[in-house]
Length: 221
Image 1 (tube, rainbow, N blue to C red):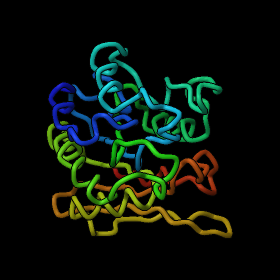
Image 2: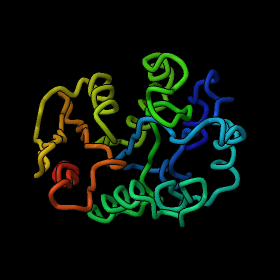
Image 3: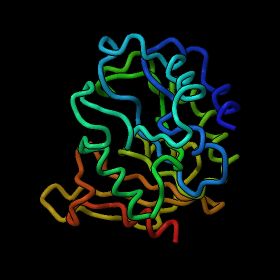
Image 4: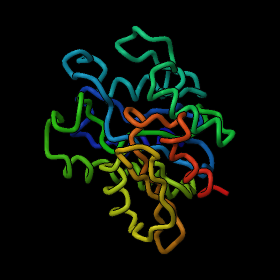
């Protein structure tokens, strides 16, 4: 089934530095309650000119193990860190551990596929990029029967809630610190949940005072 999803990657983004899949084929072959969405692949495009959306997709389809996760199996920090050990990776893996899920069996992607070090340096109109990528995400949510979309950060959460008409606030988690960042769980009229969580690159999900993952646990129970 992953081949069918790959066909929905917008041609306009294929030759840009980036990636569409953060999980391997097994994660996209059967029903999944959970779908993980980040904002976009991180890092400078200049440092990864040959890892295009197209080339990475071909690797996922033909070379990588079926059970593969960027959060568990990739060596981030330009390869200087051991696979799965960067703070953001460890925090997403912590969520999977809480849910009793194998990281390689959870479908994961990003709202848009081109790489940038931050949203402000992403080339092109962000909303246009989202519109181009949304058919890919919509197909995954519908064909895999996703019941909860976990959004990494507020930008992703707002966009996904708007696309899925998930405007009913179900629950919230407020960090127990001075900054009081809030993560929210929303639902649409069909009962599909969207968990808009404080971004794990900044928020320490493994710290009880800043751990919003209980919203996802509750959504799936």
